[in-house]
Image 1 (cartoon, rainbow, N blue to C red):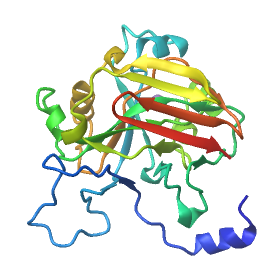
Image 2 (tube, protein in one colour; image 1 turned 45 degrees about the vertical axis):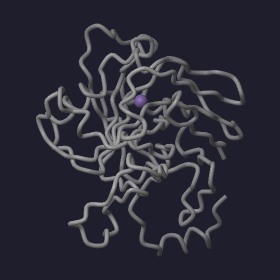
Image 3 (tube, protein in one colour; image 1 turned 90 degrees about the horizontal axis):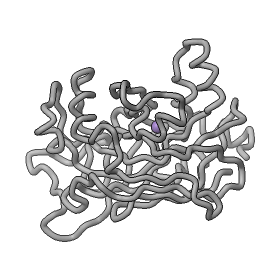
Length: 266
Ligand code: MN
């Protein structure tokens, strides 16, 4: 737990921009720095670090999950919500400046129902607006796996009261993610198992092939609402089986052939 002295010390430290590690991949498929760029600035992504600008999330992108949340997967177009950029962190690294140990997710305040949503995470490397779905994958530089942590009790109350989801979705450390894998290495995965386990018991299972909206369609749709820029991340929705995490849980999840994530709730 954070002592008052630690909290005071942390409060005086300027936050660093959120960045994620990119898997080192020797050989010609590895992204190379733009030679026209001078030394990268603090928010200029490099082949080794992806600096996060904005974080968008897709709701209800797997039919079974749409049903378990009371929706109709056949009638609802994709919808989007956001998290603050600094809600995302590479969970294997932790956030040492904020006292978050590697491999941990702190249980958030103001909830008695912290829900897990394992998701494919898309990293935008080339911006654009009104992107054609045919070209949309050209805008994706890397992929990873992450968990869209949700204070489900706050979200349920917000839905009932027709209030915003912001604090049910966009709280501190609500977006633990894996390292990112360059698209030049991973390709553009559209069919792979996705899973999430708690204490060794399978909770969520699905396949990227079951996404209602493809990554290309999501990127295209999102770019009709906002101009995408390098550094944007998109959480693409979760398969069925969402459930609650409690302090002490040991969680692990992944996407076959892409990346895995593991953490303890503290
Ligand atoms: Mn989600």
